[in-house]
Length: 165
Figure 1 (cartoon, one colour):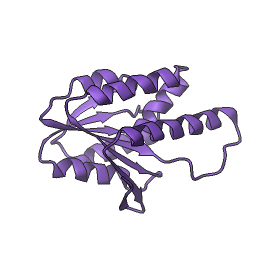
Figure 2 (spheres, one colour):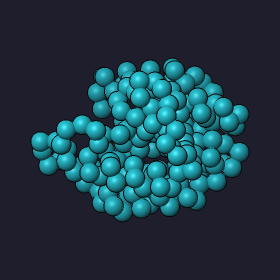
Figure 3 (cartoon, helix red, strand yellow):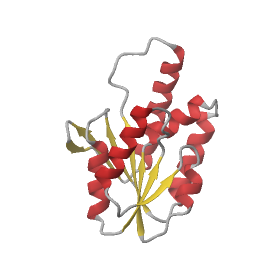
Figure 4 (cartoon, helix red, strand yellow):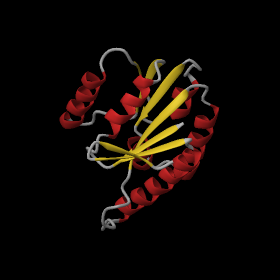
């Protein structure tokens, strides 16, 4: 597993897509975004256009375990992104500790090579409200779990990749 971390608009998705293409394997894209408004709909369309048509798209805003379980050993899976998946569960009122544990197990059992994209949110100010603090704390714990499980961790800043692990 490879974890690609970065801030918003850092170039982490493009970096992850490049890593997936470089494997030469069939590519499966697991999308966690949900188009709740026009801006997000446009963002999703832009990501699809940037990737091109040669990806098998699976939309899984909540059930990553099912989506990862469908992957084959001859594929590379790009999960983009863990941050939106976490947000979806937080806003749905789900148990984040339990969902994170389920994700950890699903990643370990996935027969495919997996690249996970996630936002690094810990370099900003401490949020001023309880929901945002809960999200920031949960995102930090999720990223730590993913980094510990990953064979490779890459940080993307201003479109430049820095190997952390």
